[in-house]
Length: 249
Ligand SMILES: Nc1ncnc2c1ncn2[C@@H]1O[C@H](COP(=O)(O)OP(=O)(O)O)[C@@H](O)[C@H]1O
Ligand SMILES: [Mg+2]
Image (cartoon, rainbow, N blue to C red; front, side, top):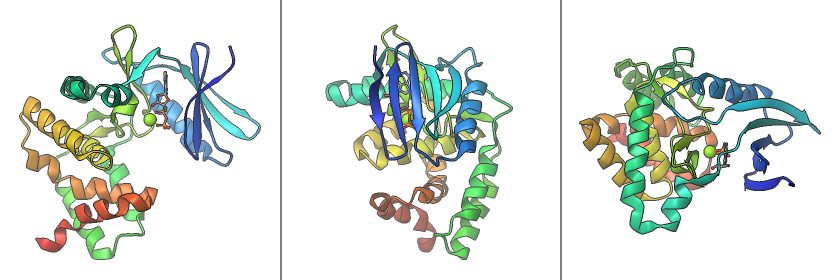
């Protein structure tokens, strides 16, 4: 069977090739990021409680790096949410339960979320110095945890397998840290696409975990500032409105 394209962006294309998935990066894509994705996946796939398709290899063909992973037969939760809007609450509940399960795991060799975030704030040239100072002080004041955080937990990274299990992919941003930061990031990712889903996710997560919404909201300026690194013009307005809360305090 020939390779079939599953998804494609400017920087990478994902193909199915029989029982494997090939994630092919564009020419010039940083080698360290490719190997980092392989390493994060390899660390997380050993956690028994989670279903994580295994990384099978890393290769270089015609100047392009590829990751080879196990293929999972099924649909992403994003596809399911788009195809069956009347079942949104049911899918969201599955997603929230899975997120809570991830946060109940430990993966002590992963990078620390606090250090990654601190570095991102330090290097983000779009922040002026006083804002950077405010954001770094807020980060410093946040409780220190070591929970497994996915870092890019959104419905396109969850596959509802035909075998009835939920699989989690795309662990390149995985770290250990404060779960509320990971929740704030998911809320941000939803908000950039669909406000209704964002609010439903936040409500359900806070409700199920007995978390005060304001505690998650406290992370929003920090995760929004870290998102500036992607320099996406369509995200700028929302991100700046979240980052600039300090101006009104
Ligand atoms: N192991 C897999 N099995 C089946 N489909 C996959 C697998 N890995 C990725 N996909 C599909 O490819 C898409 C993009 O893969 P992903 O690793 O999330 O790349 P990206 O970094 O572009 O988000 C996913 O949303 C999913 O539809
Ligand atoms: Mg993805």
